[in-house]
Length: 214
Image (cartoon, rainbow, N blue to C red):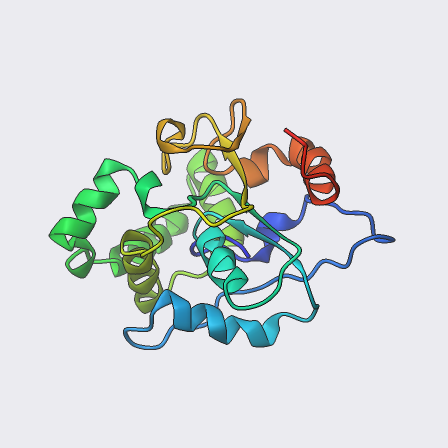
């Protein structure tokens, strides 16, 4: 499951043995009005094709796969650049939750600024925006507001048992100082799924097959 706004292309460079594994990508669907993360995760079950799967989720997708694991039998849950409970949320997110800032921020502004900036076609800026367009294609205003609200108001007070957590030590979205019991990726940012794929390709297969990997 990709991260907030992201599509399955973020997993393009993550490779598994075709002989051992069949990879299935989940996508974001439109949330209902005021839908809970629990209800949303339950609706995603119809898109899960395999019994007892290994679930891998990035960022907000990590929250989703943890919620799914409460509903079906799973072999393992691996989260990347994510959190295991609301205690790992940074202070700025907790403040935004307390003040309910997500109700007032004009999220459509993101898409408007993106489209205007891209139309300018300015060298390096354009190239970066082109990557954003490729990977972060889910920018519907209602979806963004829903996703932010569910992250900030996640009710998971303590980690579920057995969650495998991979996290970068340079993640600014979810700072490593607040993350406990994780496999640390040196130099990994919040986008380590894209920048540290070589290391992830080695670790993920070992993690799936050996709980003792660290």
